[in-house]
Length: 403
Image 1 (cartoon, rainbow, N blue to C red):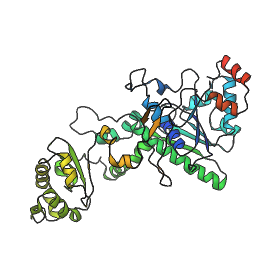
Image 2 (cartoon, helix red, strand yellow):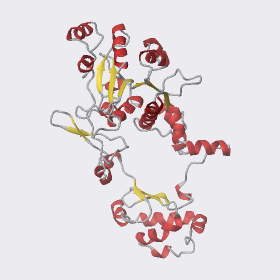
Image 3 (spheres, rainbow, N blue to C red):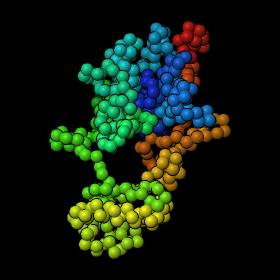
Image 4 (cartoon, rainbow, N blue to C red):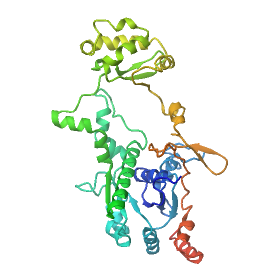
């Protein structure tokens, strides 16, 4: 079965994670994504392993694999006139041009909107930004830890007031969120072009993505004139929307938003049915008034058993709950495995590794993945398909224009 973007070609002139990961999502959905890289240095993210910034994992550059799987890599020096000519020939056949190069670099390389549209007026031109396409900082770069996590308000919202240092994000946290946003924007732009013939210029920023993620806090803070206070689990308004520590030092989170609906069933499964009619906790109103005592009571109960014991007791509970799992544990989550969220990728040498699938599934068919390309792996294949002869390829390689 063809995937939903089968027949769509994407030319990606982008680096690091934010925008390239969007290209990986499009490849998951069936698009032919051609990643343009400098023939010598390539995407600088390829160097994170050798620089020691991310750990070596048995020869698998997991940062590159997760954000570039399923693409074809073509090594072209865009600063070389012949290289730009080759890019233009690719653009003639493409549907989407995807980039996160800064405005000054786009102008210098002559790959800005007008440059690309002169070659192919139907191209959907997509730009990933740090802070957006307008304003005094439109020319400045941005990574997700800065533009998304810190400037977007998320770090401040998640750092406890008593902390001695800000809580920082995990690798590519904002980038991955933004990448899905880019992919969705491209899908919408393709739909409009299909219906009307009109191509779009699509802009997505890390700052704007962060504000969307933090929207309840941002909107409320403007209305109230102050930031919403940090949560205090000892005084949670609804004690069964709260986290509880188990006997083995693990945590379990209750997410039962309708307190009176789930209280009776929960108390029964906790082995304390007497709490159902306890006048301090008999309904949501009195549980709110006595929330400190209610939380202390639940703290004592959850501390009586291990996380695995509670998972067994709550397995078929009516309300929603979840264990706090580590990233390593998520690899073995039965639901993740059942739904194909961690597909195996064949390296082509008899070994394989797993990546995280993009979270959209079409026609009840789990996503199958191909590994990320080596730098310039498909240069000859792609350029030969454009009509270049072997002699022309050899001349371009001799001049350092291609890999």
